[in-house]
Image (cartoon, rainbow, N blue to C red; front, side):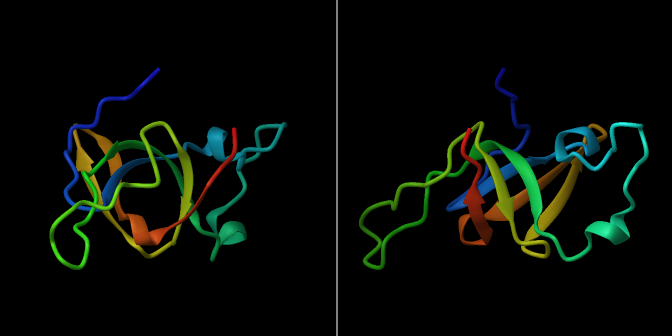
Length: 105
C-alpha cells in the first residue's frame, strides 16, 4: 500500500516517514521498549513516500535521476534531515546525498 505525501519535495530531496518502534524492532518480544540511549549514534530509518524530480547537472541542462523511489526503506544520516509535522504526522525531508543506503527486500 502506497502512502500519500502531503509534501511535494523539490530537487534531490525526499519525504520520509520515520519507522515506528515496531518496524524498527526496538520493542522486545516481551514488550519491553529499548530506550533511545541504547540506540544513540545509529542512523535513522524510514520509508520514502515522495521524491523530488532530481537535481540539475553542472550545466543546468538535464536532471540527474533519483536513485531512490517511493516505497524504499532507507537508512540516512542522523542529523541530515529536517523534521516536519503535518496533521499530527511526523515526516523527514532528506537530501538524497544524506541517504546512506536502501534496504534490500
